[in-house]
Length: 271
Image (spheres, rainbow, N blue to C red):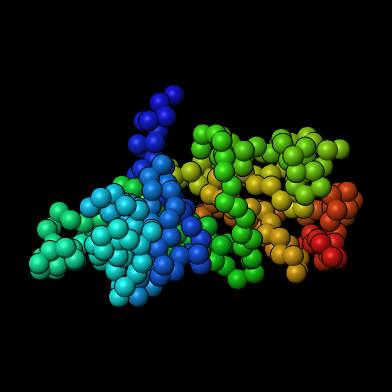
């Protein structure tokens, strides 16, 4: 197993979610990624910028500063930084705009996708995972978190693919203590960057809302104002036919506090 320092170094070249897109506006916003302090802001053209949250002059957090024009102004000595990180003015100089080329904030790759702002601390080696449902009509994205996990990232991934705990940790929502057996399933690796598909046994039901797809897809999206968007079929690969998606039984969903309406699981009235 790689040491934590080696693992952290490798993760710098990956895209990481750092904020919801709606949370980033013109004002500087502080956050942290892999123990690196970041400042995020959206420029006049709507593009999100990400810098190390450190003024190169005296180390003051740029997130404490303000925005003038389309530049961040450091709260300590008024140094100004444009969108690419270059310092455009040092007020203490006789000619403030003649800032040396080395005077620039550290800028990081940043992009927006699926309503989330993503940052990589080094040029990313892999693309952001494609999750079509997050942008598709008929699906509602339910925001949650962020949550602080006192564990390694690999344990987080393990948790999301561990169906055995659903019946006990998420009883009444994702699992049923009286039906804790994990249905047989197989996982097929489709691409090198962890997109996988799953063939489920007929005992697995949509109302359990569980999925082994490491690409982040889920079997259901809970819309509090309407039925769960549960697909009737799911392609097992880009070239093979779609396979039926098991329909929940009324008895099983009733035990979990759900009702079956028109072949789709929906939360009970008032849920």
